[in-house]
Image (cartoon, rainbow over all chains, first blue to last red; front, side, top):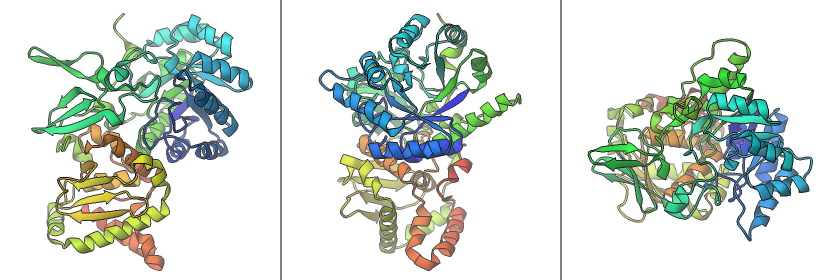
Amino acid sequence: MELICPAGTPAALRVAVDAGADAVYCGFNDETNARNFPGLNFSRAEMRESIAYAHTHGAQVLVAVNTFPRAGAVALWERAVDDAVAAGADALIVADIGLLAYAAAAHPGQRLHLSVQAAAANPDAIRFYREAFGIRRVVLPRVLAVHEIAAIARSVPCETEVFVFGGLCVMEEGRCSLSSYATGRSPNMHGVCSPASHVGYRDEGGRMVSRLGNFTINRFDPGEPAAYPTLCKGRFRAGDSSFYLFEDPVSLDAAALLPALRDAGVTALKIEGRQRGRAYIEAVVRAFRRTLDALDAGQPTPPGGLQALTEGQTSTEGAYRKGWR
Amino acid sequence: MAGNGTNRNNAAIPVVPRPIAAAVGVLPLAPIGSALGLVLGAVLRRHRRIFDRLGAHAGKRFGLRPTDVPIALVLHADPTRPRITVGRRLPAHGLHARIAGPLAGLAGLVDGRLDGDAMFFSRALSVEGDIEAVVALRNAIDDAGIDLLGDAASLLGPFARPAERMARTAFAFAGVFIQPTGGAARSGPWN
């Protein structure tokens, strides 16, 4: 299985490559990708230089152009596709049907991957993208159990990629409007969920209060592990109890499931975290590289030791072992 | 300041021993400020693209407060005249954002040895104010590949390498583990 690793900056890309990534995914510094954070991402020149670095070191670069173009501004997204191809991208990660059609027509030889933002979670949908646009790989939404992934992998005419580590989304990927509701900006259209411009933290008698827009998202007791202030991970209070309604503030860690994912026919394993620092990327990529190498050699897989890097200092296997539905 | 934790999750980040912190508390601030100004200049001469990544946030004023040493720094990220000032506490007004954590944690962020999100999750790091500016600063610094002591030692010309070795030993003794960029993350406390 291939190891697909995140990079938010050229320095992070080099770290990911050096730590053992088979491929690195990244995006331009604008709203055409789903991690449009301040100070993050790649200029055109940086993209060209970074792709050259990766290729020199035997790694591939997948360029995410995976937000949904706004009416009247489609040229920005088409230019991102053109520039990524010109920079030598090994594949484009795209979600929008119109942009897929453009990429397939304008660059017929270019390898296309269907972004997780497209939320294609069944064989019929995936076959449509394959037949209509020639996608070579689908990044599966984080809503599927391992046996469902196996069923999909068996019946679709393209490769499958699944997330194995990092932040989790509420189970409406590509369709979630919570951030848009709270801030007017969304991951789907602007490339940013719960934008930092709308985030606030303050101390309230020793407790940390996190806010997003006009909403209080959480109150953390002294010493209690904290989380991003996204609405999906807000803590609600009813009566005398408080609880997480949509999603707990935890990170995905599917390291223990790699043998099952391999047996399910998965082609590639994806690490989330383009917004994270080099230290995170190096630690996580090295840990999964070690685990994959051990798996390939038929040896016991070493413990990852990544708990301290997780949101809320807690991890989950998420829907891969879901006990609902 | 929000998230100013002192909990079990902070155990991985070394804290400056109290006798050393107390000694810093009686040192005159003026020479510390002058030295830090020189270091800032050396860092920014080597890493000009920091300002490119700061974008619209260049020119903002960031308050940096080590939680284990009785000093506070104000970084004015002005591309034309960047400067850093030192005081015993952060000013009440005039800052766009405030960042607080153990000195070794703050140094680890500058060197790219520690992950800022992980520090925030563990409550070792707290931020307040213009969070977008803080995120931009973090990303700009993380991409720059700053080697804090190496950049500072470069000011000493032919004496740079022995001075860097001595400084690393001294900081390690003080509990502030500053390592060269690149291999540092492999042995960082978060791994």
